[in-house]
Length: 419
Image 1 (cartoon, rainbow, N blue to C red):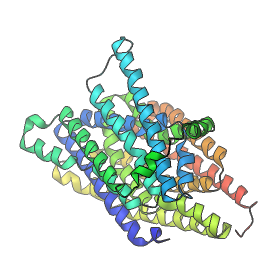
Image 2 (image 1 turned 180 degrees about the horizontal axis):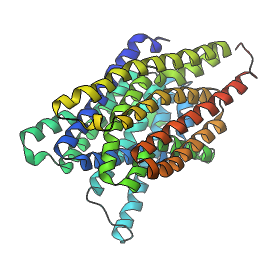
Image 3 (image 1 turned 135 degrees about the vertical axis):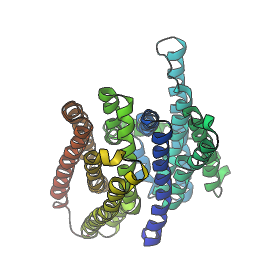
């Protein structure tokens, strides 16, 4: 259980803080130097890249990540190889479909289409590597790779832009992002340097097993789409109803409040799923319940401790530096901060469903949740603007928490109290 020491949590939190800090600085830089429209472009590309793993993943990550927990090193490496091979095939298929649509005139590429395609493809291929490293009990390594691909390029981009005005452009930003992703691929290869490559290569790719998992996963595929949709669908709703500049404002505030949520997830909830699964398997329901309650408490305490000074600085301190956008939108900032307090609770309950094998309940709550976000968001943004989108997120999260806690309470009452 050394994985779950406080040192691991601190290391994970520091690594993710660096990544999130870089993204926040980038959003502030873009807003100040290029305008909110540039923040909107960055946010939309980030949303597409975040949604791609679910869309192309066929729903089998659920099975792969669970199986990794009980495999030997060689078996785990073979499964990771099989998963990445399938991901590569899906990426090639996506490129073929989109390229054919462009060449045939069925679709017209936007200004940043091709660099966006490269970014989305590389992010997609690297995303599962990070998730699988977490399930292999290497969360610090996973978060280091995340830093490389998500934030290592931001410093050079900003410094060069400050030195040369002509480099303050979106194309240059996308080029820096792509360069970091390529570097991250080499870092991922280095991370797996101790793998017995010959033994893995000698083992055939188990395509039938991968396809069998995909055939079992239509509901879980919808679950993956819904889970990612809950994170990113807001910005597309704002783009549709309010335009790119409003999307930039929403993404700017989201980069702060979502960062708070991710810090909590990194320090606490990122490990909850593995902890619950191991506790239930090795110690029974009592230990499982203790972890569920303690992680929920820790997540809420950490989120509230971090949120208070962050909001205070944004609303009261930044205006002194002639940056009053957060004070002018304080209501939206506070409401979106509330979502960052609720999301870790929803995630922990989601991990509880996962650890108990309640696949159908897990999928249906996520599907219902993204439906509620989309429906309420589209309705309330017309009445209350961006504030309406934040209200829709809060109401949806409260409903998800209520449903998941009810399902867990009913199911756990039926299980024996010992392993």
